[in-house]
Structures are given as structure tokens and as C-alpha cells.
Image (tube, rainbow over all chains, first blue to last red; front, side):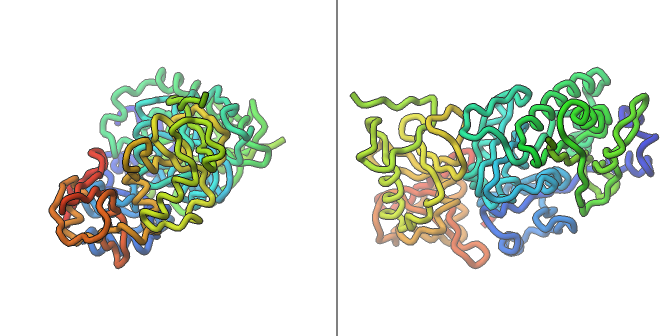
Length: 302
Length: 171
């Protein structure tokens, strides 16, 4: 937990934060509405004798009272997909609509890409990209199990992604769920901080800057880009959005979030960020008993 | 000379026989007719989808926008294996679209369903429909739900659920 000490100045009730980071997480699943309604899924869980609790902010997120959520009939049928509660936030903030063209540029293993497809009633085009071929096989497996027919899967570096393979030249929306130092996943993965270093943070920040810029360039004017990470480091969050504001045509916009959260930072160590970064959300583990997350919503401007 | 199938890319199926240029490639019409003739799935179910081939006889169904041909990793979901004597639907396709089927659906009880999902073959003498590939289904929350593809021959229902999709479930 040592690396997290650097956040003591910015997190309210830091001791509660640390205590939450040491507790394991429950077994959250997302109801895949491509395959079944929430009502039917809950009825199926009832008949299987699996207890559950629905999240207040999102009826499609359910915490299961079982140690093997993958060995339920609802999972076998693709009615449910194991996905951490906060991991279901970015697609909801993205607000994709049926028929749109959406790019999930770091998509594997596909939880958010299939959630985007479900939010679009599986109608439209979801380009699910990842640069890692091994992880793409997991993405494909999940997409087929969940019955998503609107996904086109590509294997490329998002930073210089070419749309020439398609017959359209811009997206309506893009999700940049960026590779990051994953500090917020410590409750799921106790090894998450083992390779932590400031050097790692600055190298991953370089990649994040390249990806967010390309996502903004590939999205139409008036379109939406959501930037998210599962880490607390301002160097990977507010500083990346600030870089996008400095180099591309976009602005940070407000969004509603039914989960308790803190505003984005406007300063960190020697850096100052645009005041609009307060509209971003920092979700800490002790606030909703979840993992940690950062989400910012951008509108592409002229 | 007819064009050959290129295993590296996705090609949209020709609409009909008259438009076919690649030898051995199924047409969209044949695919849609197969699902209607064998399983009673209404052809209009697939109105908003394009149908593609990559590799030898691996057929994919896709609801989004894309030009043909296209070299990407996946387009929609796999739905069917052609270029063999009997066309074989995929488990994932049957789970997604099998709810529209009226023919060749075999309803299993809880214990039979459990065995099917774990990949076991089982003796089932009572089936008096066609032999060959069937949709195995069971009741979930009061409604029929397809589990996957089974092969019925000689009084035996063989589970075609792929290894990676098999699960040991409570009955």
C-alpha cells in the first residue's frame, strides 16, 4: 500500500480509503441485455438459488452471493458477465445510442465493448480494438458468448489507428479506457502495486497521451470521447486530459453519476490543470465499496 | 476461372447464386434458407444483418457497417460452418438466435441440460424428429432458452458445446 501514501493530501478520510483497499471485493456481474432482460435474469438467479444485490445507481449491475459467478446458468447463457461495478461506469458516461459508430480503442477483454453494444441494443457499429493479439482472443470469446453482433474487432496500435479499413471516416463516440498503472484494482488483484514506480507511471502516460489524441481526431465534431483509467495517479488522469485540451479541439463536459465520487483535481504537485477538470470524477474504494476509477467526458469541438 | 476463397480476410456472401464468383462459397440466400428450413427461424430475423465468410466455410453474421473485403480480426459473430456435408450452426449463434426456432428443437429436463452443458453425450430415445444437428433447449425462468447445438444420431444426443464453453453447472 506504500505507493498510495502520495494521495494522502488529496483523499478525504484517507484511513478509510486505505482500509477499503485492503478488503477484497465481491463478485459483481453485469446483466447483458442483448441476451435477457434484468427481470428475467434476476428470476433465473432466484430459481438457481443464487442470492444477489442490485446496485442502486445501475439496475444492470448485480453483486452475486457466490464464489463462482462463472458457473451459473445465467453466465452460461450469457445473461451475465463478470465485470467490476466501477468498470461499468465509462460506457454509461459515454451514452452510446443505437445505430451509432463507436470506437472502443483499448477494448480487450471486452466487458466495456459488449456493454456499449448492449446500450446500443446491439444495433450500429462498435469497433473494438486492442493492440494485444493474446487479449483479443479473450475479447472474441466474450463477444460471442454475450451474443454481440455489432462488434468489429481490430488488432492495432490505437495511437496511429487508421480508419481506412472501414467505409466511414469518423466515429460518433470513442471510449479511451487506457492502459494504466491499475492502482484502483488492488482489491481485485493484491499484486497490482508490486511493479509500481514513478518511471512506470511516466512511460504509461506517454502512451495514454497518444491514444486520447487519436481518439479525439477520429471522432466527429460534436461527438463524445470518454477517458477512463482504473488508477488514482493524476499524471495518468487529469494531466492526460489537460494534454488533450492543450493539443486537440475539445472541452470537458459535465455528466451525472449515481455513485458517490470526488471531483477531478485542478492541481497536483507542481502542475495546474484547467478548472473544467473539476467536472471529471474520481471514484475511491471507500466511497461505494468498489474498486477505484477515474472518468472524464469530453466533447469534440471545431 | 472462378476466384478462390482468401482465408485471410472477410468477404461478404453473394446475395444469390447468380452473384457468386467464389467457388464453393455459400450465398446469403442459402444461409437464410437453411436456418428457415431446418429450424423454422423466420428469414426476416436476419434482415438487418450482413453475412460473411473467412477461412474455409466459416460464416459470420454482422449488424454493423463495413466494406467488403475487409482484413480484421472478427466481424460480428460466427454462425455456421459450411463446406462440409451437413452445415453446422455454432453454439453461440444458437444461443443468440435459437429463440426464434420452431423446428428441430429438443427440450431437455434439468439433469439432461446440466449434462449437455458439461459436454456429455446422452442416450435419448424419445426424439422422433429429424436426425442431425438440433438445438438443445431447456426452461429458464419460465421460458425456453437454447443451450447449444447437439448432434442426434442412433438414439444419442451428442453435445457440440465447444470445450471452452462447457461448464459444470448445478442442475
